[in-house]
Length: 380
Image (tube, rainbow, N blue to C red; front, side):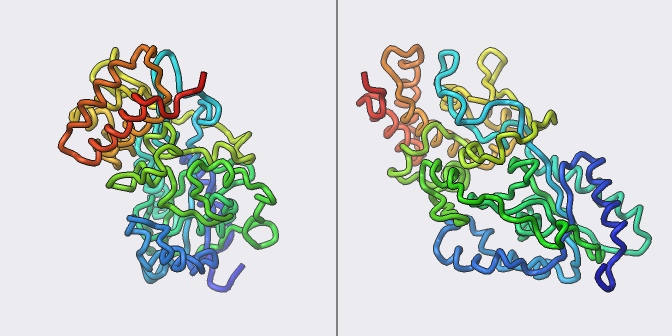
């Protein structure tokens, strides 16, 4: 035990309480500058962060910069791998509809809320348990903290070639939250006193499977090419050379996780908040967010969007972003004139092509042109 640190039994108590509150993993790292971030500034300078200005906050390099006095980081993980097939296991045509794909993390409720609820409960139990005054703050993608690096040094896994945290038993379908505290807690590490070893080996499946080649080299992601960035963070028009590789994705992308061998036996969650919700004006016209009907998404009104995605991560892209993405997915749909929804989809795209929002209108015209010309349609 390091000098001045609380006994390891206190660390064990925190991890046990985290498990009791529903977290699948919990570990503690010392608040310090993590070596994994040595090349972070160069990554920013290369332009790989795109329009995500919050990633350029220099405080992300060292948690002590965001809060002087912090000594420990309690990292908690929540599994969101719902019991439904991966995107690589299903077809875009389903029950006569033209289906899109929404990343499985966004099928249900906003994960920030799920993490915050449990993190705040853990902080409350810590305050009742530790007699001395201390500070503690919970973060769920809400501050300049690099949760994945902290999770690695808390012993929760390694950073894979797709840049995500991978746990040997749980895989990578993990939401990460953190409690920064002034308590001098004993860190949790592997049996050798070091972070878990990198077990990606010679595997390059995530790099090979990425449709937009966003993983430019192992452990380096060009976010400006990533489908998740294009469909969520980017506010303007999507580069035309990246539209076809986007396929049917309308919010996020799971491919680099779907093909990862460590997710073959990833445990499934039954948590209600991570199961697919239904959206739509009424039950008859509603659609599930697992393989959502692209036609329903493309004709969704502003009121329906705000009602259907209240408390959902999808609200981040805003309605115009969802419409833009749905148009591009329809343009990649290989829609045949004999398809049952062909006429309706053409009508909706023609209407969207005249809208005042030029980003949506141009995307609709691009999709319409591809469908009418047969671009991307399966060859006879």
